[in-house]
Amino acid sequence: MSATAQRYTAVAIVLHWAIAAAILFMIPLGLWMHEEAENGNVSQGLFEAYQLHKSIGLTVLALSVVRLGWRLANPPPPLPVHMPGWEKFVAKLTHWAFYALIIALPLTGWLYVSAGWSIHDEAPLPVPTHWFGLFEVPHLFGLNQASLDVREDAAEAALTTHAYLGFTALGLVALHVAAALKHHFFDRDETLAHMVPGVRAPFEKEAPPKNPVRLAVLGVGLSLVTVAAVAALFTVATLGSAAPQAPPSTFEAVEAEPTAPETPNVGAPDSAPVAPTAVPRWTVDARSSSIGFAYEYEDENGSTPFNGRFTRWRADIRFDPSNLDASSAVVRIETASASTGVTAHDGALPSAEWFNAGAHPMAEFRTTRIRSRGGNQYEARGRLTIRGQSRDVSLPFTLSIDGDRASMRGSTTIDRNDFGVGEGGSGDDLISRDIQLTIRVDATRAR
Image 1 (cartoon, rainbow, N blue to C red):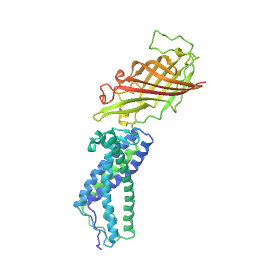
Image 2: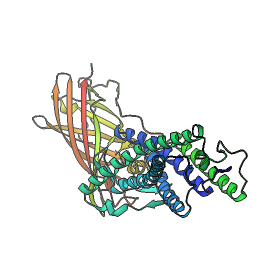
Image 3: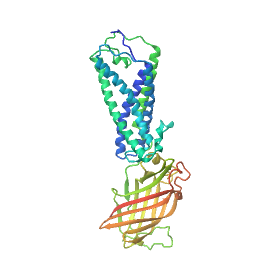
């Protein structure tokens, strides 16, 4: 046995620890992301986590290809001579399995995002991949242009494989670490010293000769790895902190002061009738009520439907089916609360080009007339105001009242350009002008 242990090259050591740190960081991040997506989280923080995960994964893929090339051009130190044949075979098999994993793991992730399909929502998810925000990464094999069935199948296969490879990598890491410690503390050979800078083999009596070039490569390389690791941890710790997200859906029935009965101003259709105190007020049930919207996303791949909702709104509802002339409703919606489940879309909706939530934080629908269409069919006519622009809107709806409980369902379609929403802005040519609004209100008669 030689008095000085042989070691991997400085470049191999830096690449080894860079890839190892990235994978050990990525696996728990990936598990957290998957859990959050399964629970319906569509926050900006989760979107940023996905972009970080993808950027680091693509970096791992590039480093792994370089690492493999360096390994082929620079043979590693020989295994300890005392190792039995079976142990040498397992060691070599484990190393080559690692090479396969560190290439296949990010590659399957790239395949998944290339498909542009969310297995959590079972719907298209056309979100681009930006490498650390510097440039857009192309999709593999034109998967984003394939049929929806192909994209769905490819996404499911790629993500399933990605998950299995991740757990396999954890198992191999545990085996690899245990073997290295066993060789150092029990076999007392040079295996651990091959790859860990500053660690001597147990039999070494003195430190190996210092090579300035080797020390410089190790110092700079491992310092960069450390800085990158700290930056990644800091990024995860502050995900979404620059743009706090809206809280879960909230609904508020506005308490209004009783007013004396008045005759509606029929000659002024833009003004809402004043509800007399005899008309009961209805309190919205937050658990089952919603205001949703739907649109089509059209690109070179065809038309893809998307659904969204407003998570913060409030309503003042005064309704009596036997006194429709005095019935009324005023609904106010926080435009910044629009959520579609596609963070790229959600990030754009509050912007000046779309809802311009900063200047116009509220949209409002105020009825001017409610009429019966027979049976449980009704129609609410009123003024819808978005971005400070108002248009007459008709909302057909069905209504059933059972004692003190009422259930209303309605739907109508508007042209977003009537309100200047997105007109001429980024993505205007991709999002349909016709927006379907779907209203569901379950309410209780106030006492």
